[in-house]
Length: 154
Image 1 (tube, rainbow, N blue to C red):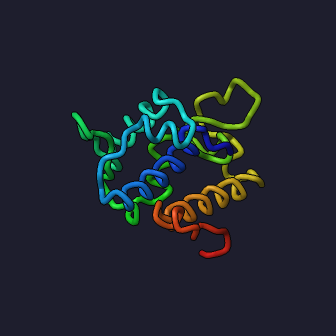
Image 2 (tube, rainbow, N blue to C red):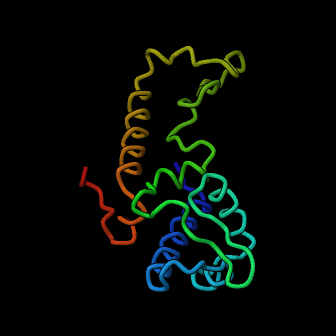
């Protein structure tokens, strides 16, 4: 269960952007400035912000003084919203995905696992996924900025 650099960088950069916009009163923030501040390449940020822009989390402003602003207030952006945009399949194990199972047999490829109903570990993986989803949905970008993201609060 690894979180990609895309998601880790996105959370860092969005937090930085929110702090900067708070100080500069909603003036758009350039990717080059965010790149410099967070030491992440502009090209990588362009990929990340391209995906965030499609969902409306951020909006791009063109021209002189252009950059990015939030399309949604940071208090309304859950950490789950950001991660779900950037991760294709964030599950603790592949057997929770449709059409994937942990059987080494080729006979079960692209079908549900024959042990799905009796597997002793499946409830563990499902619980971990639910805990993660719940935690990330119940914490906003604003919580992250304020340092209010800690285990045990739910």
